[in-house]
Image (cartoon, rainbow, N blue to C red; front, side):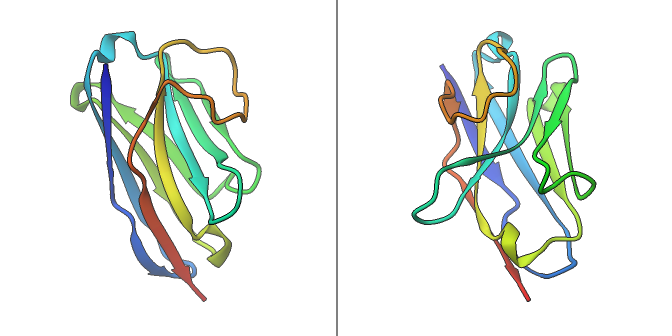
Length: 123
């Protein structure tokens, strides 16, 4: 089993920055990819960014050039640096982890999830 705990969300003004962290514990040796989704009330969960165990990355078009995903294997942590935040980035952000990597599909069918962290961007 793998447990994921997110942190770093909060309230920020448009144009500001936040860094989300996702700390993993448990059977991390089996994890091949991690990343972030976001979800607004009543909407489907959206894939924001992902990173594989060998460092390949994915970004949604809406965040390219503003968000950066990275990982620190020694700390079992994945980060999402979010710059130039916009009000439309307001969502609950969820960290995920997969035991296999089958490409950057958008479906939220993932092996493990964190509890989510709220990001609110004011205009």
